[in-house]
Every structure is written in C-alpha cells, then in structure tokens.
Image 1 (cartoon, rainbow, N blue to C red):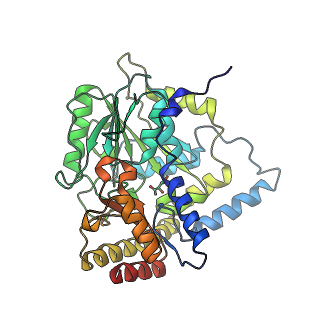
Image 2: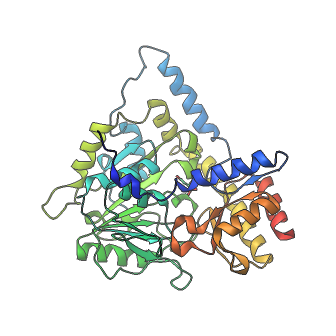
Image 3: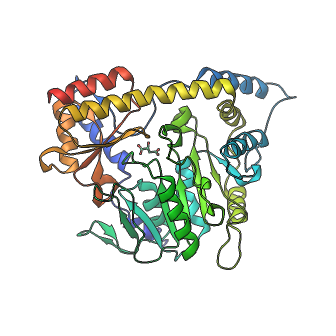
Length: 404
Ligand code: MLT
C-alpha cells in the first residue's frame, strides 16, 4: 500500500488564512445580515492601474494574431521584464544583472519553493511571529522535527522572537543556522529593519556561512529614509542573500500573479555550487514561465506612467494605515507598524488571547482581522489589521472599533 508524505502529518491545522476564511464563512452563514468588513488577509481592493490594464489589453490582442502570438514563455522570464526589474535595482545602487532575476507567478510560490535547493538537513531559522509559508514549506520538506504542543514550536527550527522588547527585530540565534528567513517591511508586525541592522545580518551570514532568504514583498510601502528597500543595498549581500519580491502588494497583482526572485551568481555553497544554477534548473524543470500577458502587465509597472499610478495606489493604502494606526491609538490600543508597511500590529486588550480577540471583533463589530498567534507563539496577545481595505470600509471599521 502506498504511503503519503509523513512530513505533512506534522503540519498544524490548515493554512492560517484558510482557517480564518472558514470561521468567517460559518459566522456569515449563521448571521446572514452581518455587514462584515474584512481587514484580515492582505489582499488588495483597488483595481489595477490604467497603464497596467492598457498593457494587458495590448498583450491580449497580440495573442490573437499569428505574427505576435506567444507560446511558452522563457522559463526564467522575458528579457523585457528581467531588464526592467534589474534596471530598477541598478538605479538604487544595487549591482544586479538581468539574468539574476527569475520571474515567477508570485512571492508566495517562490518563498515556499526556494527551500528545495538546499540540503534536506539544513538548519532553518525563522522569526516568530512569521509568514506561515516559510514554516510550512520546511515542515513539508522534513526539516521541522516534531511539533512541541507545550512550546507551540517545532523542535528542529530555530525561532527568533520578535517582541516589543527587541523592537520586533530578531537577535542572532545561539545556534548557527544554514537558512535564515527575514521579511522586511515585516509581515505580520509591519515593522522595519534599519540599514545598519540589516548590514549586521549580512555580515553575520557571511561569517557563519548561512544564506538569508529575504522577503521584500512590501518594499513599496517604505516611506522613511533609513529603511533599506533591498538586502542588496548591504555590502557583501551577493555572497549570502536571495531576495524575493512580489507584484501583489505594490501593483495589486494578487489575482493576476507575478513575482520574482533575485539569486546572485556569487552565492555558492560549501562545495562551491552556485545556487543560481540550481534555481535555474529547478525553474526550468518545474515551471513553464509566467504568462506573456502577465509579464507585459508587469513591465507596465516600470513605465513612468505606471510608476506614478502605483505610487498613488500605495499612498491610498498608506492613508488607510495611518487612519487605523491613529484611530486605534485614540481608542487606547498599543499599536505597532503601519508606517512603512500596510500592516498594523496591535496588542489585544485585557490580556485576551489573539483568537479570543478575533471572535470578539467578529461578533461585536463584524470586523475580520488576523490573530497574532497564527503567525507563531510570540504573536500571542497581538492582532493584525491590514490597510488593504477600501478607504470607506477602513473609516467604518475604525468607527466601530472606537465605539466597541
Ligand atoms: C497575508 O495576509 O499575510 C498575505 O496576504 C499572505 C500572502 O501574501 O500570501
């Protein structure tokens, strides 16, 4: 008789956002008239910018004509898009070549898949709280060891608590990891890391021979000057870092799907094997490339008009973030994040657990958020709200919370 992958048996519950969706569906079923405002999953609500729509239309028309029709995309991405992306890095002073950009269908897939190119016994360090994909994908790959229900942790992972005490920036772990997942601006806390602090992480990774898997999906939300947009702004990052980026949050591609990963050619393992060639091999074997029309839409993001339009969209969401942050503060909550990120991380009132506060908010004022403990044990007694709702709904949500 066949056997299923036993690693999957170690996964805890279902994927966080699926659990929330099921809870909200059950509540809606029982309360059909409830006017629910969703500030849970970080999904955008504003339509794609006009420049993106225009490039999409053009690309669709090209597909209708034999002379411009496109079949399989190059598996690593079309040159026009890789060049536009790399050019933006170069303008920021980061030395990235076009062929170090690997275009994909999104940062979620890349951040889940990237672990495949590392040894099965790699020691993994993750922040706590953390975006659950890094954890679950390494559980599936057999790196987690057993789940310890008392600690709410897997025994083989190195957890790096991000708490109020350390201003939500992890400290170097006592035990040396092989893979270090960092995400800045951070999901879920909405906090950032300074350039100096990130440089310390790069130096540390180079010193101990680790790789930093740097998720910069929320880079477009940075407004303060000392906050790095890319790990490649740090000296030495080309020998220790991979960066993952998304089109979902800066340009609203959550339903369109596009992302990319930057793998520098200097990044080599203990035996001198270049991760660049492994990721290229993996991409070539398992992926037929993001669709042509979507990559054309992605290129629109880098056109001057596209840039202007997506900046306006980011500003729209950041106005919501400001409204949530100050509104919650006025209502007496302790609040973090929301300045360089579309997430607001609040402390639950009256020592409520994160899930108690979730139920409370849903039943009392019909607002959906994300329980902090769903992102890891250090997220307990915290709660995440997103700024990705419409402005009108955000205003209504904050009014309801203030009256609660
Ligand atoms: C989140 O809410 O954390 C994100 O939307 C999840 C994702 O981007 O996959």
